[in-house]
Image 1 (tube, rainbow, N blue to C red):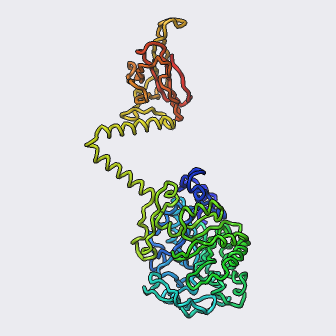
Image 2 (image 1 turned 90 degrees about the horizontal axis):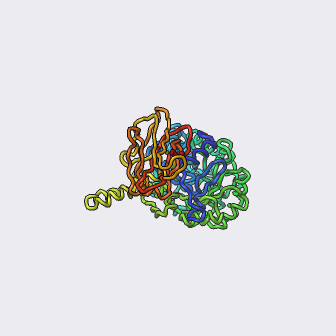
Image 3 (image 1 turned 180 degrees about the vertical axis):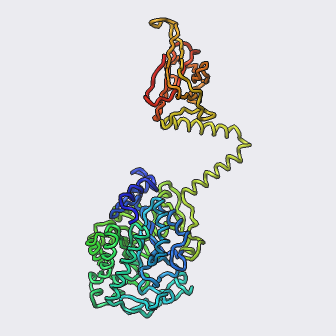
Length: 564
């Protein structure tokens, strides 16, 4: 991998992390982190895979895909567009692939942008099998392959946006049955593509074993009527899945491999005859291989046919003890409920992630979700690809509107404008003093006003009459400093009816406080963390006596002293 797991975990904990709400607040469950294998997810929402078809003629990701993925780095996990593993055998006319050097380099730019934004990105490895139209095949062998010679019923058609000739047409009716040697070659294609994903900088891979595509065609009883070791019982129908998982795990490691299943798939001629049994058996096979996670999906290509039944999820979890997720186009509220009840540990928001680049922030701040435009879902070109507004952009627009309103009303209400600015200035000063992150004390204008360097400061105050050792006499104390010390003036520190002046030529700031005799300290402030110390004196008599405050920067001692 391009970045080791320890570095990835540390970086994600510092970058791109949405502040989670309190335990009793909404969406607490899905905002919690999750560990899949050795990959850290900052929340439980997953950007699911979908073929947006924005690659070029060579099936390389276009530059706009870099920004598209980077904007969605706030999801706990991102899964890429389905990437073809067999060169020249394309399910989508402008879909993605990861079989050539140019494709790997193009994906590298995407993964770098996602990692820079603090995200985690997996590559989905895909083979269409019999769900193919001949016009999309560009390799020398134009045959459409599948588990058997049985094609997809003609009433199931390939959308025009997926076809090279731009027409909606039935899937291929003539299918060549894959021999054991051909299946072994396809397994090697998956392993080679997984290695390319590592070179491209992906954090892991997801094997597409659902959606009515090749591996799913072997898993389902309705499409697999073989009588050899790849057909028959559910265990034997899982053989191709086992071989692909083993080959990919050997390349990237078992903790960086996820699997997508569709036991209830109804598209592309699939019929869910034994969904619970398939989920249970597949869960046992994947448990033995210790994959990072399993996703149960109820649709593909953006078309869903209802939520995944709870009984199917429970059947999978009977044998699989790893992380289980669902992808069935549910709302954020439903996702929160499922995670809270421990039905699943994560939720894929495939369609929702398109229109909501930062869904977690929207949910936490109560911002309504955008609706995905299905007309531009998988079309070609930049139109409708990433035209949705994020929560941060909404806030920026709101601030600009507020600033514009202030500018328009400034002439009509100047007093209100000045009052607002004054409140903001005082609030900022007090906040800075409270946080104690600076060694300077604010003044109103200018904020930082260094004064003349001095070598000593003299502070004089009248003592109360009858004090021991010289009643009524003035007490003078001398502070010796080095010549590189500087003093800062103090103003607007919350004193009412107070003024600032300088004592003689020493340039020592003092605050005249009429109510200093009330017994309160003249400046009830704490020294800053950076090393400044405050010297305050309490006045002992008269409303007209002054409390002189000298502020100096002292790097040797961070404490408060009283002069006098």
